[in-house]
Length: 150
Image 1 (tube, rainbow, N blue to C red):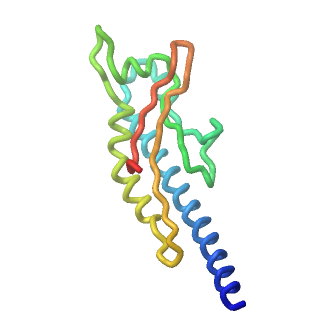
Image 2 (image 1 turned 120 degrees about the horizontal axis):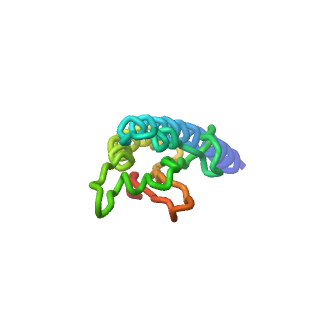
Image 3 (image 1 turned 180 degrees about the vertical axis):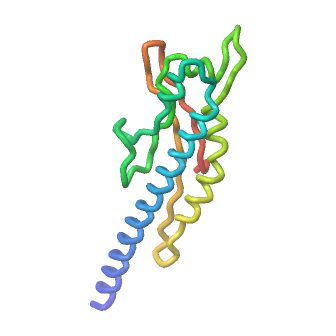
């Protein structure tokens, strides 16, 4: 009988630790996504500011990031953003999303590592990010991926 109580208590502690890790990981995702948006908006080439103003971070359902979200889609919505990022035969690349993501990758990994391991229960958290420019009239969007490589 004592073993059942201990297992029940362990299960409750593990559930509590998992919930806390998810909350902390969500905070990391929202913080880093916000950082990436700010950096990309600062770095994007500006003519009309349409692309700059279209760079956003959204949650899995396409709405605003909320507590509990462990995924963020980050990117511009103008059809020509990939042309700026990667260039064309007549225009050199002027990347802004890639460098913004790259500048935050180590920060993301470090912060997520701090969320990391709860040694009493063996629960751990790790993650990655994917930033997507949504599909639009000009064709499919562009996906930028990075993260912890797990």
